[in-house]
Image (cartoon, rainbow, N blue to C red; front, side):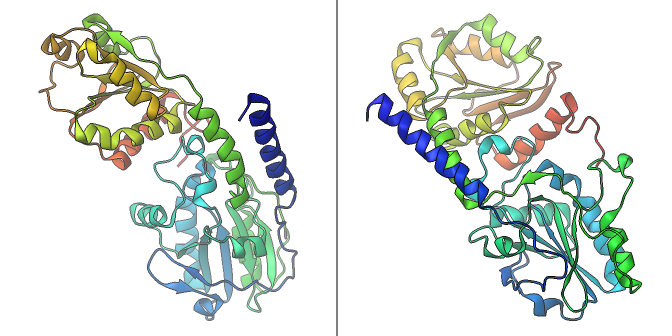
Length: 379
């Protein structure tokens, strides 16, 4: 395909995606009967409106794993459930996002994406006390309700007619809350009154409708076209990488080799880790523990995996001197990984394959300490 044809193809793809955005569903109107749903929960059960037949009020909240705004509300949703369940209110969370529509660089503030399996992990890790349902594969239920962003609340009365739709409250950080809109609506309905405010705007990550994958294809093509290089690193260079004096970033250094099976197996996840976090104060550096005459093979390996992070390789045949320069506490097993914070402190030192979930749970809070999301840690 010629360059003009390729550009035209990408332009048409983007145009089609933009057209699809205009067709995104809108929130249902106040007074609308509740649409039907039949969705799997992370607890292994299937839920329908009949599952909550005994509830005086049904509070459905469209939320997800990856959105930092949604994460800010997780503790409040648990408290909302604890406070209102004794009063006859059923709180139910629904993930509207199609997991494949969430780009890697949209997950820079999270340890988990929005797949059903990751929802299960999130619910257990955070101790959710409410049903967490998945609508991501088809999004049919979400399209019937019309959530705009995560989180987005829809409250239905005893007759299952919509009485409130909008935000949980007016601030992601609790210290700035002035209006508890969802609680106010619930209190009014429980008292037999109409909510004083029936609709509000919402704020958070947009719902990731399936057609957004068109954007992601364009992004993936751009990533695949990024230049991939490898440079020789002598002992002083490796020591400077470990000391991390001037980058101002969390630096992940992974030592690997083309002949190391575990290194090769986990390398794609390293590439994904770079794409996920590189927009924040983060740098991933790979170090190929090969002899200098292996440069062509190393570069070919990196290019085939679109490894556009910073890549270096041993610049000497004296591997032990280079090992000492990089990490004096490294015994020599591959792969070997260290994570260094912006002050030069070692946050992780591990020889052997990585647990990437645990790695992300280390990186995200470390990044938040450098540049906290929202300015303050209000969770």
